[in-house]
Image (tube, rainbow, N blue to C red):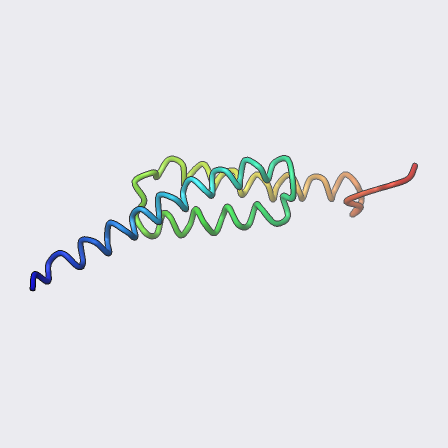
Length: 92
């Protein structure tokens, strides 16, 4: 039995998962600028951090996801500050 192939497969799977996490963090960060930035921003930050920690080949996308996740939270803070703590207002 060849024992050297098992770690290579595990590394390739982990790197493939990390690449998927990098892309997912970018997409969630981008969507978070438009919708549900309270939820999607932190998700983008976590996925980008995990992708970078696992050594993704898509480092640029992970960094963009990290930046967009932070931007989501900045937009949320600016919205809360300008609306005096009101997120949604249904009436006049």
